[in-house]
Image 1 (spheres, rainbow, N blue to C red):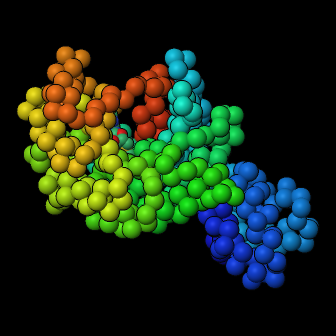
Image 2: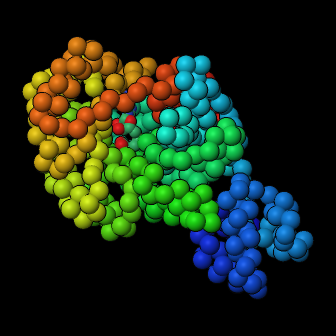
Image 3: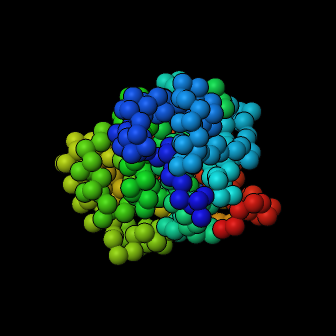
Amino acid sequence: MEMTEKKDIVSLLPDQLERELAALGEPKFRAAQVFQWLSRGVRDFDQMTNLSKPLRETLKEHFLLYEPKVLSKQVSAIDGTIKYLWELKDGNAVETVVMSYKHGNTVCVSSQVGCRQGCAFCASTIGGLVRNLEASEILDEVLFSELDSGKKISNIVLMGIGEPLDNFDNVMRFLALVNHPQGLNIGMRHISLSTCGLIERFDELAAQDLQLTLSVSLHAPDDETRSKIMPANHGRGVDNLIRACQRYFDQTGRRISFEYAMIDGVNDSPEQARLLAKRARAVSAHVNLIPLNHVEERKFQPSTNANMKAFIKILEDAGVNVTVRRRLGSDVDASCGQLRRKMQRKGGAEQA
Ligand code: SAH
């Protein structure tokens, strides 16, 4: 079928685009023109007005263009955080969040439709993995969030739905696209990639020599607790995770950040704080505490303020660099996975 043979042109880097267009007999500069249109969010060849009509027709025959549709857009009355639910070309949906900070606007993007990592406190993994996102689809989350909101995006966090290292090649291509000087040109130092700890991909990531920040979702410093709430800990283990972090730090010189969602009675004891401090110090990691967002389908509750305070004090007294993540968009289901879940419950377009 002709439809399925069409190539995803938005996932192509300029040099690949050059080769594709050369095969159609087009000169090099055409690739730069097309890449520029695509990077501005043009998703209709007929709007590429500096291309000849016959060329536009040829492009339509060979390449696919799709513009993600806003299925839902919620704007927080408290802090202006915007949460988008986008409809993809196959009817699946993913979430993107735009947050405004003093230093600029950050977009939180999804990397997969659903997730297969199974973290017990997370909404994104209910229903499992549906499919990987294409590089173009991740790029479009950034681009169309910026175009729709009118907010210039300066920072990207890969902390939405999905496990980025489980979609390694497409995520690497997305990073190259979004970082490209002729594209959105967002610097790697303004990008964070969050993982549940797929350590078998750490060396490969380090080898890419990117200056991004690696965030590791630790959530527990001991195997017993971590394996209970994060199936990804099985067969890997905290000791191996810490060793992989050490190696990553040695290879890249980039300090790792540990994400730690504070869950009442699960991972917030003083003993766990002391062990976390030891783990963090061993790899010079920064610790980012997140008050757990309660998810309707999940039994977990956030830690009490008193427990959080005591936990923070133990970390600080041990000389660990700690921050507590501000809760943005608490009125718009801003922890990822929740909006997509709601739509699924209502029997929306998607089948998970
Ligand atoms: N798969 C990646 C990125 C997605 S989630 C990862 O595991 O890191 C981004 C962060 O939000 C992770 O640290 C994740 O563990 C955390 N998270 C998931 N559900 C949460 C919840 N209900 N409350 C607080 N943080 C949560």
